[in-house]
Length: 366
Image (cartoon, rainbow, N blue to C red):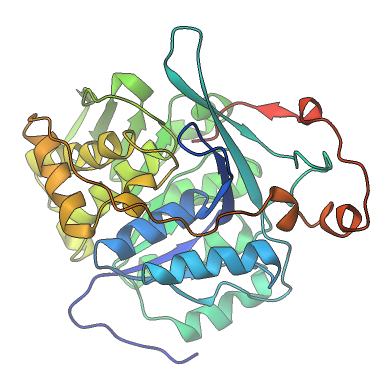
């Protein structure tokens, strides 16, 4: 793969959690399969909005990995570096949407196969031995996005920071505290959810990010800047009729990056408070729109890009509107056993499926 330079489109490089999302929704009883994970959603969302996006990772050529590549590529994401050696089984996350007792849709994430109960493959970080190769193969992006810390992502962040890229860090867990602290010293934008930050709140005390963003679920978000104003400023969430809140945080990131970070790092350092507010509200409008659809990027499969942009503008103006959908699904008519690396061969030979009730549940990861 040769270096390419895009003159007219801002560039995004993503290194983090890219997975296959398997969605069991209320609209359709059959599972739907889409590229997901925080990095996968941010990649697809910004490519959808016209960014030149390159995703790096260690996804193998398994069934799930091919689905992820096919979905990302349909939106314009460059997946040429998504299969770095040594390749690892593609992570899989199952989302089940249900109605609560009061009739409100809610989702839960499951990390094991409903057919055989085996745990799905976990995320595997890029090895440090691949860092120099990535540097050689990529131009410095406007934004380097990372949601998982490892020695490789820290070294890439250090490299691209020196080259003038905005380092955007969106952690979901601390894992290695030493590496986490190093990333906090390098990042320009630090974004996290209040729910997920409970496990690493103490580590956040000494970050050096120019902009800190904390999402608060249905209560909106708050932010503060180290240079110009240290007090927190709160922004309420838009009120919309909800089908699924999965991916709301990812869409907030997509809208914010597309609005504010398309030029250079200088634009971030010199940005006015009102510009930050405008860009965050833009991101919140994207998140609110997607909550009307099932799946972390459901709006992309039901609305064309012009219609989606129009709907976001409508939400920003607080004028509710209904748009006709264009129903597109990546895959239909297959079960989760087709993508599960543990149960596929055994089920094919006639092994009895275990009860779905044995699945292990976890709290929402987004």
